[in-house]
Image (cartoon, rainbow, N blue to C red; front, side, top):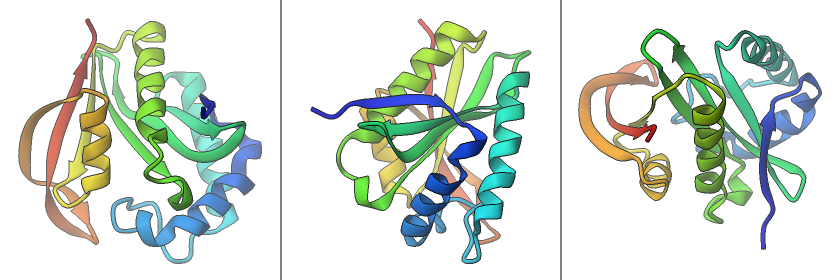
Length: 170
């Protein structure tokens, strides 16, 4: 049985985050605009500093996903709208860990944390039409497929349709 845990990102996560991204670039770059061929440890350090500060301010809630205590990916909430109680969920997983059911478990933990610790009432997942892995995660956690939105996100700088999923607080 796998032990899957989440915890807020820490600045000292830079090396394991970078190593996971380095291993997974080919899978991640297509869908995550922040990931690029020259992604460096400095990019990881810069983002983690923003993430830690953002978490403290309630602006973003990024979590390290751990399998048996080892960093395997990330799942978090961004675009937090405290007025309307809505946030966007994003996630990525180290390529060598894909297909093991880790991300649905982690995403559920993040959603539960959010509904218990914030005023959020709705969490949205926006996945590119071709991003089947992200869509499967949304479906496995019971997210409702709300719509397909034309030209909702940019992929390689070009507008792309995306599927909008939502999870609503009881």
